[in-house]
Amino acid sequence: MDLVSASVPVQTGFTRRDFTSVLAGGAAALACAGRVSAQASMPTRVIPNTGETLPVIGLGSTRPVGSIGELGADRVADILRRLTSHGGRVIDTWPRDADNDSAFGRILNDPAWRRDLFVTINIEQTESQAGIDHFNRVLESYGRESIDLVNVGSLIGLDTQWPNILDFRAAGRTRYVGVTAAQPALYPQLETFLRTSAPDFVMLNYSVTEREAERRLLPMLADRGIAVLISRPFMNGAYFERLANEPLPPFAAEFECETWSQYSLQYILANQNVTCVLTETTDPVHMEENALTAFKPYPDAAARQRMSDYIDQL
Image (cartoon, rainbow, N blue to C red; front, side, top):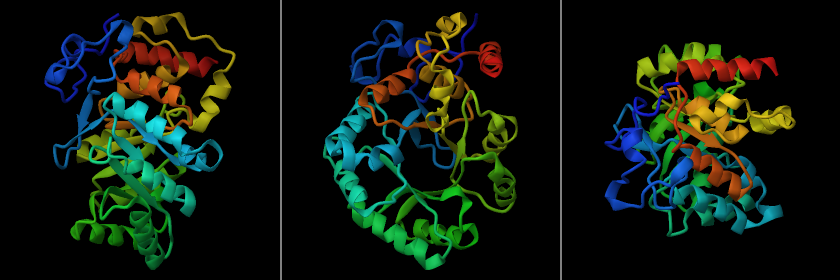
């Protein structure tokens, strides 16, 4: 079977086949079976508006940050360490709790990665001033004068918050603006918004089990030159519950897929309209497994069809 390994563009100057033998800047060579050294640079994709590149695997931090009180800040710091050691740097945040957010801000400001991270926040207030106040509180908690990306979360208060975040960008308080729509019920509203507005980013739910976005929205966003962040690659954990007693299909070995998490991530990353997938975990080992998936071959169209068919019949 042909794999989308040399044809999927990654912004490294190499094909994936080249990348597996030579790492930029003389870093260590990739190990066998898709395993890479901690110094490897993760494949990246372009933000269309600016040409800046982002690594293809990031962290959705809601659950890790929410676990700080129970599991401690060191564990969350280890999650970031596993991601950044393989070249990941996109951290999507959803600030909810002042104490946890301040603790997470200290983690984000670790000198080991502070300058490299691409940090996003999501605003979900219906009132204009409440959104502004929330933004200011987050910057204070995170110890930053600006943020990389501000989203109107779940399109909540879109009419009032969208002008606000455009003002933030104009003032240099954020570099990019976007919206999130992590459920198909929001897609019609998102499409209406896109007819008159041009966000830099859109965040959507998408996985091998939730494929609605690939039928219409992902091609539309590509045509509009909008970068795409993916949430819910594992259906917020429901994916693993559904597959707990199911073996991987034998054909998964053809593209070096070893786990159900890789199965969904490889399916998603094979779609060239995706910029970065946000994986959410409270387990540093799982974060590393997710990050390493970026270096594996991507299944071609025929393999992706087999993958979705297999999931649908379970």
